[in-house]
Image 1 (tube, rainbow, N blue to C red):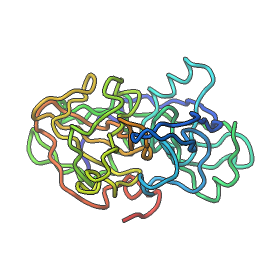
Image 2 (image 1 turned 135 degrees about the horizontal axis):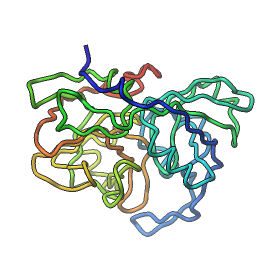
Image 3 (image 1 turned 90 degrees about the horizontal axis):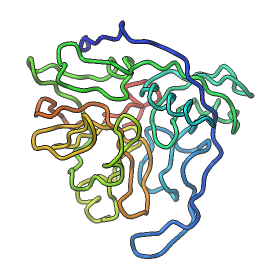
Image 4 (image 1 turned 60 degrees about the horizontal axis):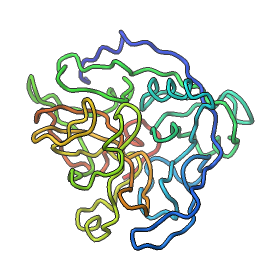
Length: 286
């Protein structure tokens, strides 16, 4: 039995976006001073899905699956703010019309995972409609814990353990030291992710962070993401790895905020299988 939520009080509504054309930054500067051209954000990625490695790709900020956006800025903002992780998505046009997918990330665009056989048929410009539900979601017995970007489906799928009247325990694949959290600290955690700084490759290997997978649940201790992203002793934030690594200074895999509190009320246990690919039955990874 999962934790009680107010899911029945939430509004479920349709938002739509379109599979985007890939974007290229041009030459991307490396911390060493070199520069290179790499595939960047956006587009329809055929060979990277949630559950795959976050490091090691010849790419910059790799977005797995289909990246969707809306050309009207107001509509795009609405799509970003209303869509939550785990929401259902449906292809509404093109050769893959009728195919069901699932929202697995939010970056510059929304990221949707589709079965490989359907992905082969999806084209740039195809319409994708999302059944958006999750904004306003609360843990009824733990109102001091703030949920962000969580659908009821996601929360119901997570093996969260109630410890007492103030504390819960969440499985994560790893702990990220707050000192390595980089670009995105200044941005709204209800809208976009925060990159970890992966330029120190020796540190990434020492901490095991270079083994991170897309879709991993992670914890950042002493991070308060309720109204922004800041340092507060005792605060805890649970995040989701939604995009791949970057060679840019101050950038790396992106971590989307899922839940946060300003006191030590979220405990965690290390579980190598704590990945939404497993929890949402997208694919089996271990």
